[in-house]
Length: 193
Image (cartoon, rainbow, N blue to C red):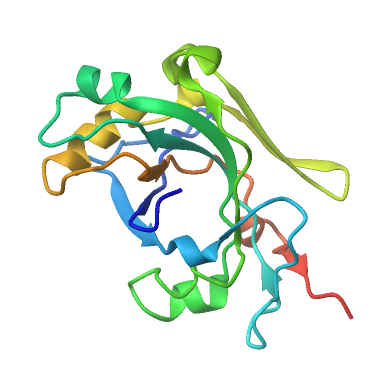
């Protein structure tokens, strides 16, 4: 990943799968992660002292392969070089202190990202890709990318209307239901003692 790479993340981007009344947002919620918060599988994450633990969020990351400026969704989809799994580990206490999510989303090493799989191997996420999180062997998130509210092309197009996306930039597409803080009782990846 180039030093100039930006990581742009999407909040609340999966439609609920139950029968409840739901109105999709008109625009996606976009927030940033610093590349210094990224890591790979197996790298320890230090939980901040003011947090009971970190929450999990399974996501799909898309790597921009060509420059995008004011791109339409089809052009933006074709610009994706490849995809990775991403765990957007979140410090919920810090995230909820203010209306901005920056602190909660940038804990050191809190963004383990998997290896890149080329776009031609993955195919179009609109055709469906299963995403899951398991915590201590228990499946806590299980969804399909067919439930994305805004697909990768729409997201990249939307962002490119405000800022130019460059090769190496990463889009993290959002997480489905099943995160720990909404469970009763709330769950989080706990601090090791």
